[in-house]
Picture (spheres, helix red, strand yellow):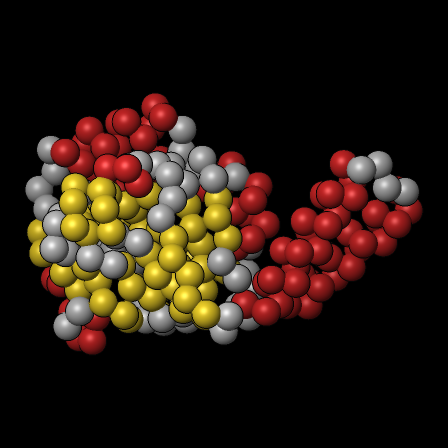
Length: 225
């Protein structure tokens, strides 16, 4: 399931993050890639620091307030956001994300059920740079507005198309969900979405309670904590 989360960040935090990124010291993105990914990764990335951690917390706080993200991801743990930059000629070839990530500066590991990309500048600022995700139903190109987030299964093959003009800025991170299986997580998301739509339409409260009970009993059965 690929889910777009529109306007995760509004203009004020976006402007602050972009200003910081303009003055940041970028390094070769291959330094943080696994062996296979390093063969196809050609971008710039910020190393982990107190400043990246504080900036990442702005994003994590926005995630915690976003009902659509919470419903789609059912997050258990969120990897501290990282930041990358693509200049003309840079790209990231087809790859799959590592199944487990070590949280920087801690002994903790996180299972990567979902991958997420937060677009930090407008699509008009650059040509190319589409996030291309492959799944059962084909190939999907994603190029969203500044502040928009896309969440998709980390088990998907994906790539970033070459940037041919301008600069592409993004944050990226992974989520360990309470529900490991993507199919089960999708069913819960669709059920939750239906409950919210029926509530807004004024559906009978007894039926809504039955549907809500089904949702929570399925979550109780599938949750992996």
